[in-house]
Image 1 (cartoon, one colour):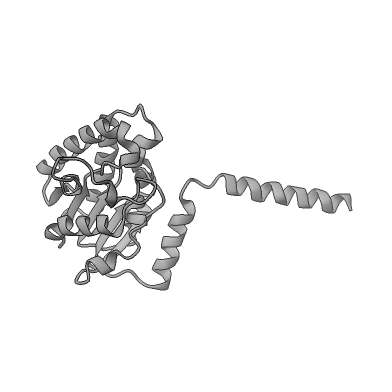
Image 2 (cartoon, rainbow, N blue to C red):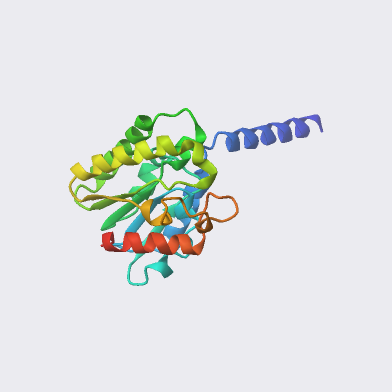
Amino acid sequence: MKKMLSALLLLTFALFFSQEKKPMYWQDIQNFKKLDQENAPAKDAILLVGSSSFTKWTDVANYFPDKTIINRGFGGSRLTDLNYYANDLLSPYQPKQIIVYCGENDFADNHKLKAKKVVNRYKTFYKKIREKFPNIEVDYISIKYSPSRESLWPQMKEANKKIAAFMKKEPNAEFIDITKAMEDANGNVRKELFVEDMLHMTPEGYQIWTKVMNPYMK
């Protein structure tokens, strides 16, 4: 009986620690793999990669009915997570275009984080994309100014400015600025475009993104 209890305890500890060792968002990536196994991903699609603004855009295909979209936004991911899972996010696909929305959570995760650090994280991910897809269109959607994160706007604005300058110099690359379209006539962020948490967007917010993104979509 003691041996059985010991064995059971060992198994319990083994299961506990194996789960503990799994990195953040590991399950999200496994879910993507399962989706790809069930339905082979379309070639020449537009691949969306990034954080919760993409994750929660579950009906994105309805906003772009004439486009083939693969949405691989996951959790509240940061650029560090995109870099960590870069192979899983890029290797299974043969897209004609990649659109990235990420960076907002990097600042939220560390309020003292400098814009330069986030920009360098994005450049690292961009390099990983280019190593695999040297010639396709790669676009970055500007960090939105969520009302719940107003204290972080200065760093976010600086990061947007630096990433915009970087993308301007790169071939087949665009910086898609959604910030102006989300402001009212007085230049204030329209809070009605956000749900209660003042972080994630309403369908109207996504409609605005759609109008801004459309000219850039392949």
